[in-house]
Image (tube, rainbow, N blue to C red; front, side, top):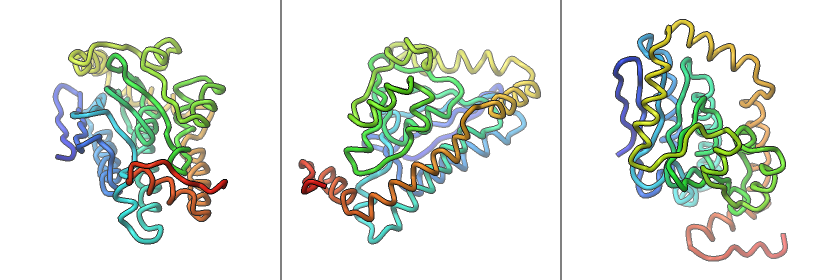
Length: 253
């Protein structure tokens, strides 16, 4: 279990498989970043398809790993690992297509929000549960998927929206039955792969260059607040409650 990478006809497929819910460890985030960077640097590649096997596309950071660790080492590692993976999607030298199923939460939003094209299985839920876990982050990427006011509501309430809602806003290209998800992503990838590699790579670089928001710096700014929240103690209580399957007690904080 982990990651598998296959390439054929200019399409590189990167598949995540981290049971039970595809929540990535610190090492997993860094490994994903390396795989995506390497995929983009392959001169034979025209497009990358990022998807997952098992339950869910991505459930974000492995909170249990974080709570097993002493001090802030795992928190800092997760911050840096997520930053590296999100950046690798955005700066991949070729377009990245995210094929999403079941749920896309927390760090998954960072991956999908920085992707070039998104396709999803019917009923897939997209959301940021960070506030419930005493953290912040990836609003930068959620804002690329939903309108500003809905993004704020989703952050404050930690409630997700479905792929069908995102398709209505145009951020999800297609919503299909789960069994058709990979084929749909590969179909779009094949269209991209039929173009000139040189032109596609130039197109990716030019589109990043005209983005109105520096997603890397914006996300790093968000992460600073997560670290501050950890110093208050509310984040540990939220994560302990998650691991112990109970309601968090913030004592009015």
